[in-house]
Length: 331
Image (cartoon, rainbow, N blue to C red; front, side, top):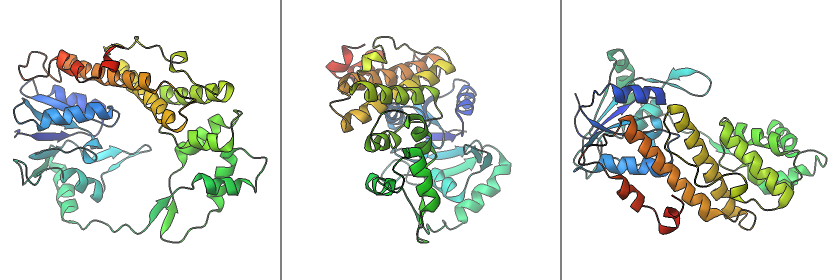
């Protein structure tokens, strides 16, 4: 059933886990999904691409479609539907083509790829999508930069950023070549931080930061960072996060929590590049991010996704050696 390398494409993490277990131990699998830290995704892809390793299967969500160089012989869709945040729907033609197009890579051992589905009933949609022309992009999304919001705020001098943004979005007029990009996350952040004693530019900066407001830990992290910044002008990581407390997760719930902690640390690093004096612990945050990635990989190994006894498996001390000396001192 499997050729090497081979990618099985489920669309949800629970299905990723189920798909991996159903391999019955006949294959070693790398795994890639959206909330996996980028560093871990990259290392999982490296193991899969290594022709000398035993990792001949990659179990992935639609995160496979972007940002990774992969040598794939065959893509297998376990489903042709996905949850888009509000409902289950069929994959679109561009989505199917983007994922299916990862099979076969010029200059690799697999210059020609194969694509199929687990469920025969999904094959007509796959075939029709691959034969269909890709829809033309007729317009592009725009988001107002700070200068534009600042000028617009003069019309509403007593309003907070949330109200200013809502008013702007309701009244903005664009040509047919453009549309206002999705601002849902930005508005959620603005609603949270509007009561803080921050200037408009600082509020805008927090609003465009890489935060997932649907993730409780991530949103709490942003709120705490903004509060400390507003009250003290400086945000020390140790006031919010205790280094040395990270552990290998033992359950999927603990895994999700560790992924969320990684998001908070990533947010701190992002803010430190823009407010360097106020977020001075970039090195510590970066080291803890690296540790999060290693602990997540350790969880994948212990869960059985990557057999600890495999002679080809990268040993724990090798993973640790990937870290700089500054990072290792926090292990």
